[in-house]
Length: 152
Image (cartoon, rainbow, N blue to C red; front, side, top):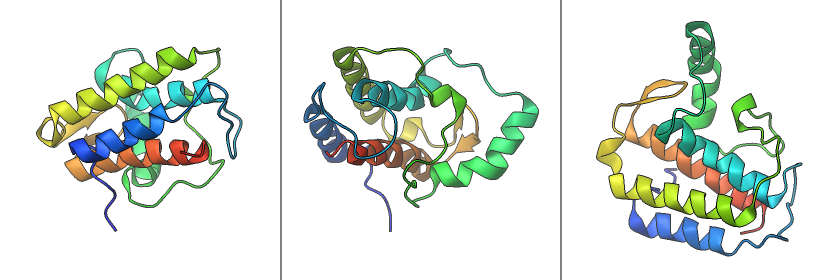
């Protein structure tokens, strides 16, 4: 079953609506992150696309990522609860809820406005070139997993 298309305005708006239903006091249904850390964690997927904040993996690490992690991240199979996360996605400092929420909404809007054509065969930070479906799954599945974790 195909995942909803995060590049479509309707789906992006739906995800943003879910984000807007979050409050600073929203509690997680599982896991260790608080709401602000979760939003910052979700922003990392977009930072890897739109910023140079995170160093690129070396050749060996990229080969490992492409071989063992790419399918997990880009497939339609949902993430398991409490699964291990990559070091770049672990938020170690305290974050401001409103700032992280607004950043995430801005990233979702920017991605939707750029559209599918901007992502077709675009090089990812860790997995090499991805097709539109893989990019969609990477973005949508991750957001849906964590929004579900926080009950929206």
